[in-house]
Image (cartoon, rainbow, N blue to C red; front, side, top):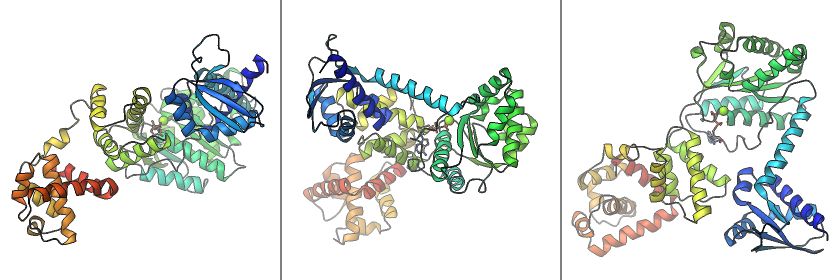
Length: 471
Ligand code: ADP
Ligand code: MG
């Protein structure tokens, strides 16, 4: 086989793979790949290190198999090896995956835009398929907004129209908006859905003035069934664009088209907005999103980790969710740091290293443990009281070894917390819990540890309790 064909083969395989797996995964795992050997039925792919080779062959073997089948259908056997020649500059069969990815996608995006433009001067942003309802975590902070969006996705044109979502940045507005667009697109195949940002809208509008195609622009919107406009705050101060948007909204509204908007502030605070447009917004269906609570943060973090096929220990996830609250991007960002740390140094996340990383990155500043320290309990009496209240049992039953099953777990929890979180010695604990000896206490603590490894609910409950007690 000649050199050019070999290069073409490996290039095309990488191109196919890059389209089969998530961008983030591709960029993280596929740094360089080489073609080491190829015959009619077998191909050997080379990787930088055994770490990269193992990870890739473990996680993406199906995608690679499919990609290879597309490019060279006769191949049956794929061999993964560490290629010591991969960094050799004279090795021409090496693909720099990141560069390749950028080339492919700039080209693809250009084609998509050209296709969408239809020569009528409107650039439409392509909806990103990674934003869906099924990977959007719903909690009290965004329940209303997501319910409204789902209702619109089920029955556009008559549920909530226009729908307007507002709140601060990074709380999931774009995600929800695009999920709505995606859901409508897949349910109503013949309908035209567009997602754009107000910034883009302004550019289109300015271009249409330049090219004297403003009529065409309006006509285009008249033919659209659903319009999703993100970040409308960008048109603040742009009076003429606002005027045009107002006209277009009127056209669309009157012909019963679905309009969905997002904004990072409440409408009444948009003092720089045209009064006419503002009053239009004010009577729309408005739903807000606010900061996710602890449970939602935890669920989001777990969902993000799952999407990246990264296993994050429960206690670490809880620690992160507990110590971040500003917005979701912060959670994602920490997760990416942890993954990078793992990929690069093979260091798995623990509470200690995550805490020091969060501190280092000054995300948490001094607030790291503040909330816990505030109401910290000090004595075992307080603990016993709290545990008995939490589990609805008598203090006496908690302290006495009566061997009834329903009292066993609460008793073990109390001992475990005294030992692990209040630094009591086994002797002291044994004195508190009458009828027990040193080894029985030790046994109880160990036993509970094995139980909570399997029983996530109990583990969670213990953490809730610890939270309340500040220990
Ligand atoms: P906004 O548009 O409000 O600034 P984004 O939609 O861009 O926020 O959200 C920032 C990131 O956080 C995105 O990656 C998004 O997927 C994620 N995100 C936000 N809220 C959630 C949620 N409830 N569930 C899952 N991911 C979320
Ligand atoms: Mg956004």
